[in-house]
Length: 296
Image 1 (cartoon, rainbow, N blue to C red):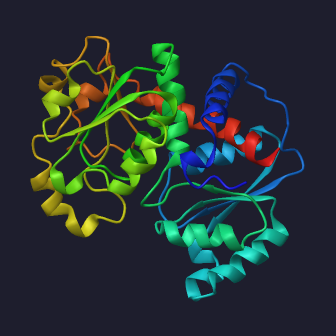
Image 2 (image 1 turned 60 degrees about the horizontal axis):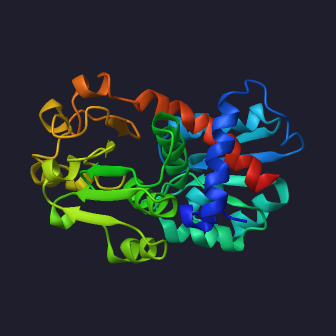
């Protein structure tokens, strides 16, 4: 099976993966379930957490990770994506791919004979959401009926967060300028899971009663040309001490990283409510759970 978005698995499976990731965190030496597997890691764009966590996860499970840089492949010179997919399927047992164009990733998966994991597109980032849900359950002891406030751009991570929350019963409030709010497509998909989603342009209103406050950079990969415009539009959407004082005292602060500094202050990043580094660590454990599920 392919894992291109979080809804490619059933809610029951998602809960199982979250619990498995928590178990992996407690097990320094996991079973070598991928001992005979060669797994490719293809990245069109820069990556720190996704690249390293997946590579280490494959290695810890006994598999062999193979790093594939687009500048070292013929695809950069115009080779048909279908040809690349078919050939790599003859060499590898699976592939994780970071491609900005989600349609291109879908085409790659359709033409491939091996399971494909989405390591991020401009539309979805399901691996991040899996780690986020693990983190929330660890910190809060549950998922259902918690309140998550997303502050800022409804980007790819936000899309996956909306869907992951809908699948696990987390209530979501999005605070974003109208131009940058979630698409109807994402909201309609979330509705299939009886989602509880509110949308506002008021960050203070969004964080009231929030158990989790989540933010991301204002200028995501692929939106750099809009940088100045975005900075102007997102003024007032920074997660800072003035904002979080309106939330619950035990609210946790999340960010998928890298941190730009405009969307969140360093004081909050390093504050007592922040779980950002734990969240980043969990990319490793959730990756092991996912890899073991996809390539077992």
